Figure 1 (tube, rainbow, N blue to C red):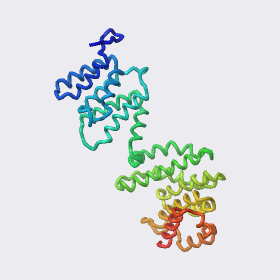
Figure 2: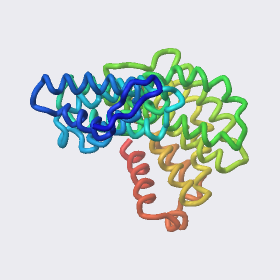
Figure 3: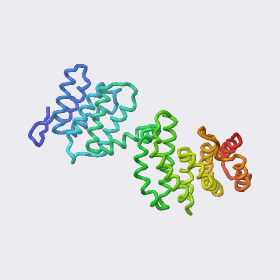
Length: 335
C-alpha cells in the first residue's frame, strides 16, 4: 500500500487507504469500528484535511446511506480541532457545518450518540469560526423559532439601541423603524404563544415607551415620506405593547399621522390601514379598561375630516386593500 510522509517523518496512508478506514466505521463489528476510528484519529493529527475530505465523501447521504454517522462526526470533530489556523477554509467549514446542522434538524428521533457527535463537530468548527456556525444555525431555523429565541433578549437590544436613537439621521430612520416593527411583532407573538412567560418587565416597558414617544413626536413629523411611512408602520406594531395611559395621550397625534398617509399612494394606504387596525384593537378592544376612543366621534372624524376616504378614494385601491379597510370600519361599527 502506498504511503505518504508527513513533515515529522511519520508515514501517512494514501487517500484510498484513509477512505477504506472511513468506510470501516460502518462495519458490523464493533471491534473494527473502534480500530478504524483510532487509526483515523491518528492520521487526522498529522493530516486533518485528508481525513475530512474522506469523511465528507461518505457523509453526503446522511444517516440513510451511512450506518455510523456518529463515528463520522466524531472523527470530523477531532480533525477540525487538529487543523492549523492557516488551513481553515471558511467555505469548507461552512459545508461541514451545514451537514451536521441538517442532520440535527431533519430528524425528530432522539439518538444521543450521533446528535452528541454532530454537536461536537459544530463546537469544533465554532472554535475556529464562531460567527459562521451561529449564522448557519440561525438560517436553518424557522422564522417562528428565531423570534421566540430573540424576544427574551429584547431588553439587551433596547439598552444598546435607545442611547443612539435620538441621533439617527433621516436616511437611516426607516431601517431602525423597521427594526422596531419586527421586534414588536416578535414580542407580541411571544406573548400569545407563551402567556405564562411574561417578559415585559418595568425596564422593557420604559424602553418601549421612550422609543414610542421619539418616533411619534419626531420621526412621524419628518418631511421625508419614507421616514413617515416606516414610522407609522412601526407605531402600529408598538401600540399593543405600550401602556394604556401613554396610548391615550398619543391618540391626538397618532390618529392624524396615520390618516395623513391615505392622501398618498396605495402602498402607504395599506400601511396606514394596518396601523389603524392595530390601533383600534388596542384602543377599543382592551380587556384592561374602557375604550380609549369614542366610536361615534371617531366615525365622524373619518368621514368629515378625511375627505380622501371617499368613493373616489376607494376606487384607487386593489381588492386586498379594500378588504382590510372594510375590516377596520366593521370593527368600528361593532364596537
